[in-house]
Amino acid sequence: MDVFQTIFSFIVLISLIVGIHELGHFLTARYFGIHVLKFKIGFGKELFTLKDKKNCTYSFGILPLGGYVQMLGENNTYNEEDGHFMENKKSYNEASAGERAAVTVAGPVANFFLAICIYSFLSFIGTMQLSSYVGEVLPNSIAEESGIKIKDKILKIDQQKVSTFNDINLILSKRIGDTGSIEVIYSSEGINNTKYISINNWLSEADQKAPNLELGIQPYIPPIVGSLQDDGPASRYGIEEGDLIESINGKRISSWQGLSNILGQLPNQLLELIIIREQQRLTIMLETSSFTSQDGTEKGRIGILASNNLKQWPAEYVVERKENLFNAFITGLVDTYKYTTLIIHSIGKMMGGSISADNLGGPIQISVLAGSAAKAGYVTFLSMIALLSINLGLLNLLPIPILDGGQLLMIAMEKIKGSPVSDMTVEYSMRIGIVLVVSLMVFAFANDIARLI
Image (cartoon, rainbow, N blue to C red; front, side, top):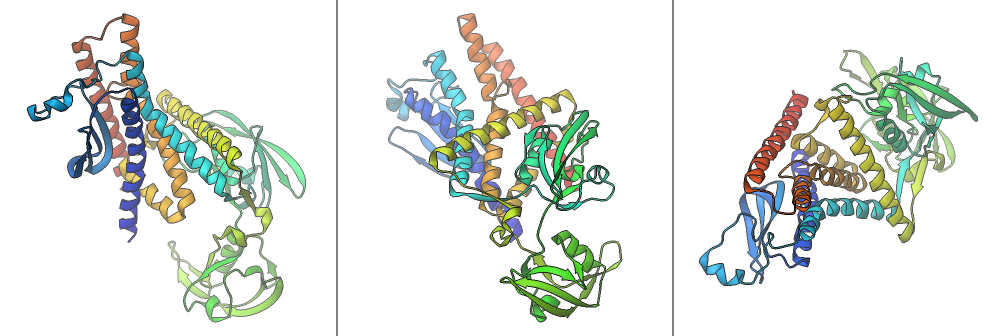
């Protein structure tokens, strides 16, 4: 079932962002009266085709890894029986340089527009996110050395305000590949503290970790029961979903991570749990079960999972964001700009060598992430679609022949030169572009295989 969900999520994701990209080219070409011969999503054998009254063919290929819009005059021919449809039709070559530039740039613009729409929609319907409270400090980490503790709240990083845990990762991501220091301002027991964390080629290695893990912190998760294992100790002894575990054997529990650590040290033992249920404090006695961990040690458990229903969480540990229609649109613009600049900086650092190119992912990596995002819920999945749509828009703006950016470069050269670029220049540039793009795809695919093995 997980494999099917991963494949299906990948097809939906790629088809949507590629389809929107090609739709941008298609609609702009139609607007300028350029005749479109074919609109195709995917490559390879066509699963279905249909033709409209304007003699444009629409199809979906068996490999949803790209697509194209074929316009009249783009190195194409047509059958004699279709000749009467082509009479007095405007070809791509007959369009002005400005019109061709507009058609070319419309694809990437459509991808940015999709991201704006998704971020605006999420802001309008409202989302709940984890706050910037620290739930776990990893041993021997930068955070531990800096004195950060559980339930401390991160307020600012590099003078940028932090309100959610996602903000922490976003701001830290901008420092990938840097050397210097990161300023972290956090609140501990009501007192604000400032720490300067020294970094050297921050997260530039190939086996890149999430920024918060490199810093050494995990988000705060309250010790609230989300679900119970059938016939597990918790289920048998009367613990219910939504219960807040306050203490075990008199030891106060401050977070889910703390709860997990304590239970792990108590296999097959009788415990006294104090829980809070509907504002009432209850005492439950139960005996833990045990399991053997990967390192061969015996650990305790009671058969519960953490709550991922943020509505059950105490309000201070959750940030709810919901805007009216106008402000949601502004948020969509801001979020799209924020992630676009982050990706541009990352690409620049990768090209400069401060970030390992081994971090580049291909279709396998995207499919895995798509499956995980789909399982995490529609908010995460839509957010991933928006992020990958921005990626596709930026990728196509690179000045590489065969990509939209390369086409824009050719049009600019034509405008400066005052005449069309020679056929030989176009042919050789396209060959170079194909080699570069194929090489990039092969490299990304090789990185995917390396991650699997």
